[in-house]
Image 1 (cartoon, rainbow, N blue to C red):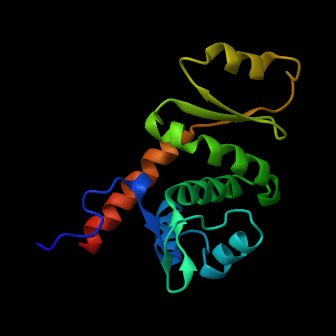
Image 2 (cartoon, helix red, strand yellow):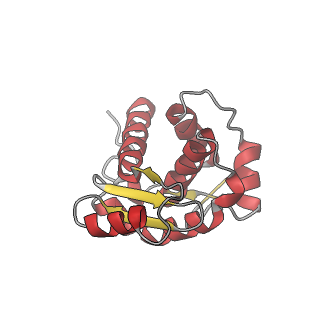
Length: 166
């Protein structure tokens, strides 16, 4: 068996072509949503989730692992009915925190009231979570999302696709 260029590379260190990102997104959404390259290009062009990789594929910058996770989160939230234009601040917030989040994703929860976004560890930050849920903004709709589970799911899909390509 020939060695693949990614055999010993963790997903967080990989970069992805737009086609590979499209494949990951389609797998994660169960191929229920139309995810075309034009849509990915639109999100990049409008700076919602631009490709931030260091290398190029066919003249275009590749997507970093963080870009893939953010796009997966975006499509999940879109499916839940949250407007895409509300994600800009959330994406900037997550992009800064993704390296730390990747190290210990299992118990990380993303909480939002629609205006502010909080990334909390469900065990270590119990008081912070309680403050978000019951603090001065209590009574307002609060939404919690297990971002760690998404990261684990993205890794699983990437690894499955690598095995198929090998």
